[in-house]
Length: 234
Picture (tube, rainbow, N blue to C red):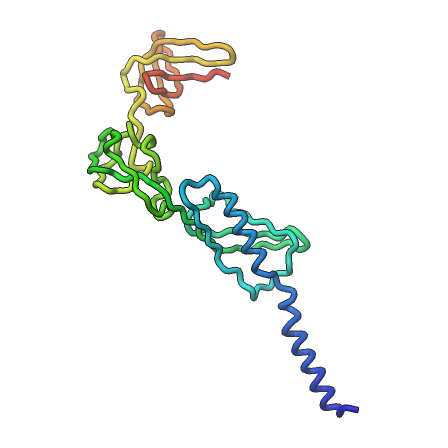
């Protein structure tokens, strides 16, 4: 029979091992959490232009979360799958908890830069822009990627040559000008009526514009290229 001291020492050792191993066995394995984040981001990034590279950050193996059988990744409202982001992961079963994992979504592709210096108010032509390859996520969020997004638009500010071109740098040329005769088009279910008027304000295509009709009535509609103002009737 073992001495009492040996039995006490054995029991103490078993207690220490149980204390050390018990919580570790109950912790959430980081691998499935990171895998869910990667799966989610790959789906969300399908519509992004260019070559997408996703890197999922670490999820602490020393967490105190109970193991989860059903994980679901999500983004906070307004968040975009672009650059450095934080992705939420919630456990749906058997226990409810939420955690957050850092990630980075890089996109390499073509974006527009100015081919020559631009002056404020200048209307851009095809020779005023060119495409350049690079890291899109390192540019402004509204960086332009297609010449059709810039040609025909006016520069809001002066820009040096080689400057990445963003939507905020441009404004649409007016579709109607203040004082210009315009055609007012009323559209509704099964009908269309045209009337003549005079624009009381300048507006780009898609913007609101006020028009005074020949009878003096003032109406408001949506400016369209070509000197039209559209009013949709319910």
